[in-house]
Each structure stands twice: as C-alpha cells, then as structure tokens.
Length: 70
Image 1: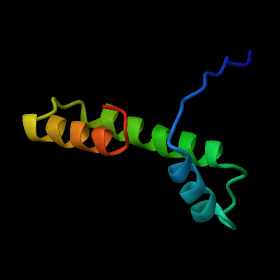
Image 2: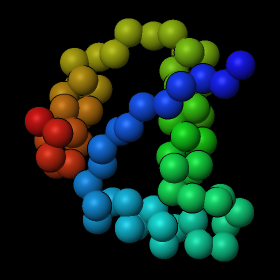
Image 3: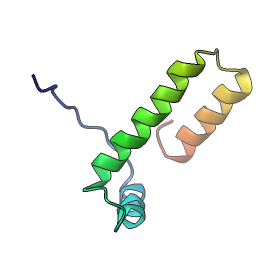
Image 4: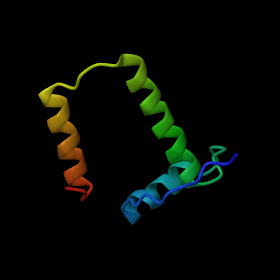
C-alpha cells in the first residue's frame, strides 16, 4: 500500500540551490534528494537517541529563523 504524501514548503532560493547541487548526481528531483537527506538525518537521530542540549536547540532555532520559519 502506498503512503500518502504531504507538501512541505521551503524557500524557492533553497529549492533552486538543491536543483543545482543534484544536477548530474543521480537524483531525479529535488524532492528525492530532500527525502534522502531527511531519512538520513532521522536515522542518525534515532540511532543516537539523545536529548538535545540547550545549545543544540538554540542552533536549530537560529537556522530556522535564518530560513524564515521563525
């Protein structure tokens, strides 16, 4: 059974940069690349199963703010 999909919005300049990065890489689309990267990150997080430090949380918040999400 196929899983349903959802839409995740990212800034257009980031999407264009991903298109440039994956050109000739074997990925069929930026979406395929993004899914690959997210699965890798989640896999690492599940292996580590650690609590985030305050510094790590602040770093993520800063990155999200720089991307325009916060």
